[in-house]
Length: 151
Image 1 (cartoon, rainbow, N blue to C red):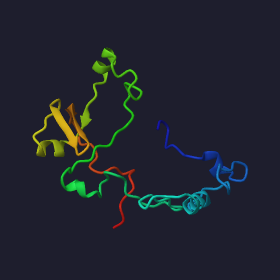
Image 2 (cartoon, rainbow, N blue to C red; image 1 turned 90 degrees about the vertical axis):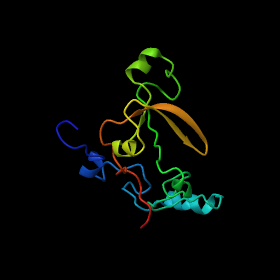
Image 3 (cartoon, one colour; image 1 turned 30 degrees about the horizontal axis):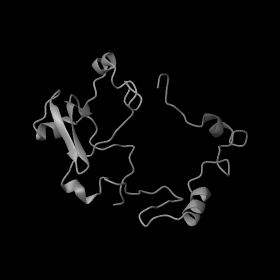
């Protein structure tokens, strides 16, 4: 951020009484009464969980899934800058300016004999696709913004 760090909720932090948050208490809430109510009133499936406190909840096809032994890399999607969902995905100039690629850490690429620009087969139990690989610099090995499993 130019000129310093981004400070979230600046007005609230400077004067919480005059600038309450959009929570029942008007404050930062670690425990959520709303989520506790949903957890106690909604009919959830056995594997569906709503926590009133921040907690790790395993996702489907997540890092702790037993299929990890068969598929050791995990693909994480993001909003691609050259299109909106599937809109604009077929515009030649955008495809040339921002080619759709799969980003792979050079360490993982080297272990698999993958070079930057190679067409690679990306697959799992749900399907497969062919896509160019982007491997130029050390992308993160673990996302610092992701929740961690207990332990």
